[in-house]
Amino acid sequence: MIRHVTWAGSTILILVAALCPGAAAAHGDAPMELDPCMRQAGESVVHFSTYQPQHELKAQYCTEIPKTGETFLVVDLVDPALRNIPVGMRVVKGIDGIEAQTVADWRPSHHPAGVISGATTLDEGLYRVVITAEGRNPLRYQYLLRVQMIDYQKIVLSVIEPLIGVLLFTWLAYKLVKSRRTLRNWWTVLRS
Image (cartoon, rainbow, N blue to C red; front, side):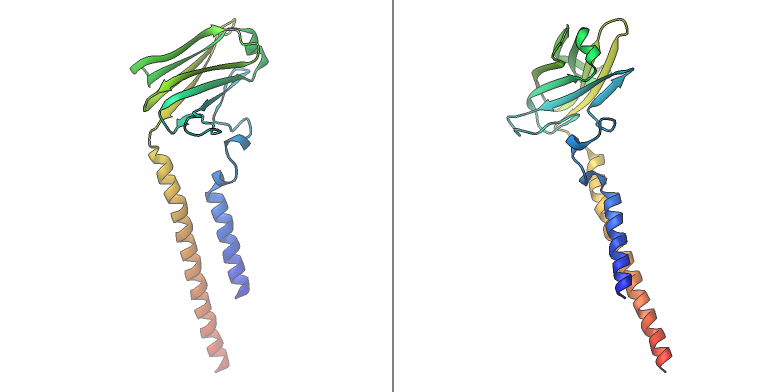
């Protein structure tokens, strides 16, 4: 009996850990290859972050910005070669030409410190951040921003994961109770 309970408990723990991998690490702990804010074009890499200190002082966002208002955009030129060529950044409201309107534009220039930053006001909706590096081999990085929009896929996933865990737990509990009844019936037969 104790072995069954231990087995069921460890199985549930493993399944919950497998179903909720995002609970293990936040954005800041993500390895460079898995960081959603990193973009690579050829050998060059950039990192994009946004901040809204008026809403939450230390929060850093990448592509999902929870509130509208003044937003600070920061691009880290991870590749040192990008610091020696003109790099610019443009923020466009809308995507793929649909209602496309330039909201902010930082013309290409040299950034020896490796950081491009600026502030703009973002309303609710979809935006594209386009980072361009001029030079012998021009590079282009893009980020799709969602400002104060509901991500239904994340909501569904956040509900499905616990639901699967509860269903699995219920199934294991049922199997445990059923096996206990079977053992009890065998015990009764053996005693007679």
